[in-house]
Length: 256
Image 1 (cartoon, helix red, strand yellow):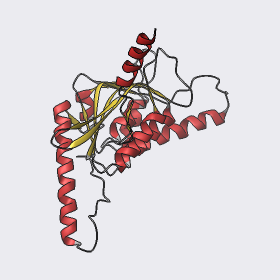
Image 2 (tube, one colour; image 1 turned 30 degrees about the horizontal axis):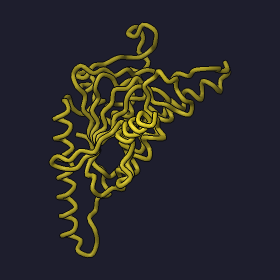
Image 3 (cartoon, rainbow, N blue to C red; image 1 turned 180 degrees about the vertical axis):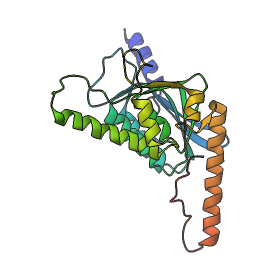
Image 4 (cartoon, rainbow, N blue to C red; image 1 turned 45 degrees about the vertical axis):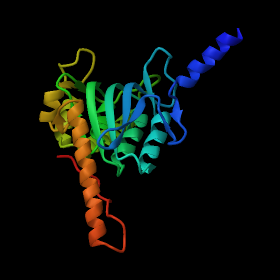
C-alpha cells in the first residue's frame, strides 16, 4: 500500500504544473530555447468565463492565462510570445480580456491559427502583433449570442449591440479588415445552417485582411525571431542616440 502511494506521489511530481523559479505555469504552455528564448501559449477548446464548464469540455481558463501573460511580459529572459489557437470560442468578456492583454504587450507576439479560430477566437487571433493561419484552418464570424434567460425588452438588444461594437472595434483596430466588411461577414445569411454569419478558410482570412499571413509553425517562429532581433537592434540604436536614458520601446510592432 505504501509502495503504491509512493509511486503515485512520484507520478504527480513529474507533472509539469509550474516552474516556481520563473513563476510561469507550464500546463498548456512551454518555454523553448532556440535562436531566442520564446514562450508558447496554447488557447484551445472553449474559453471559460465566470462559470465553470462541464468536465468533459476542453477549455482555456482566463484566470490561468492572465497571470502567465503578466509573467511573460515581466520576465526579461523571455524575448517573444507565440500564441497557438484552436478554439471554438466561448465567453466574450473573458476572451476580450485575454486579447486586450496580448495586444498591450511590449514583448513581440505572433499568433498562429490551427484547426479553428471561431467566434471570440477571432479577436484573440488578431491581438498579436503578427498573425498567421494555416490554409486548412477556418474562422467563424457571427453576432454575439447569449445562453440562458433573455428578457425581450429593448435594453437587451441595446446590450447586444454594445457588446458587438466592442468586438468589431477591437478586431478592426488590430487587423486590416474594415468595419463595414467585418459587419457584413458577421451578418451574412444563407451560409451557416443554424446561425447568421460566415465561415472563412485560411486563404480567405488573409485575403479579407483579417489575418496577416498564410503560413505554418516554422513561418510563425521565424517571424517572431525577426521581430525580436528588430526590437533588440532598436534598443541598441536608442541607447546610442540617448546615452543618458534607456531604449525607446514604447511602440508596439504593427502588422504588415
